[in-house]
Length: 252
Image (cartoon, rainbow, N blue to C red; front, side):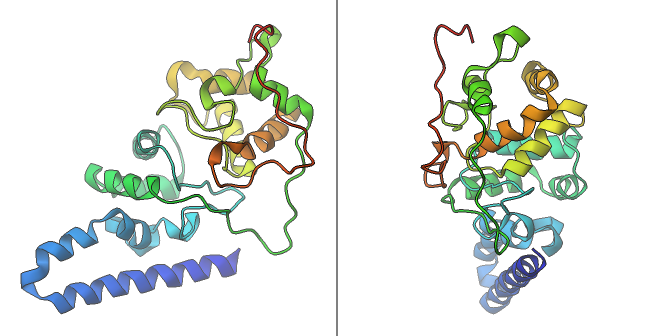
């Protein structure tokens, strides 16, 4: 991934340099237009805004907001309200990530809104994967059952209740899981489970993640990642069994 990261750094640097040349060439009479350009969501994503080029979103999340297919999430087509709240969570400490907290703290609310609006309009594309990476295996059936029906005997609510049967997300507080990298989703489950991530309504994620068995976490993350709710994002392979839909008799 080092080569990919270097390419993104170079691309971001070229964009920032180009923006600087544009401002310099227009003179004082164009300061207003140049200021609007500099503050756009796209330029913040490519150049980092007040965080500087080292805080450019593209360095980790890709030029199209696609993530890296591993531990970096996709931002493209993300719900505006949810995305904005996560930036606030990084700033106030509800989510802990040194780089993201530093970046969020250097973006005022107006910059955050513009950044969120920009990513919400990006189309979904497959993440850049390491050369020779194999496709994700079909998740075991237990993952589909947990996601679509939950486990009433253990008090586990179905993931579909909040995240949608297709992983598309329900409302502004419940993000889409479809199209997110499985390793990223697994890492988030473990952060909820250990109390290192918090801030959701009624601590639902903390509660559910602690009721799941350790060997259920990875299959559930893998199943969630390849649900078809991410529009053009790759779905489950044709050889995988279809997802089970909630059974109204299950009591979930």
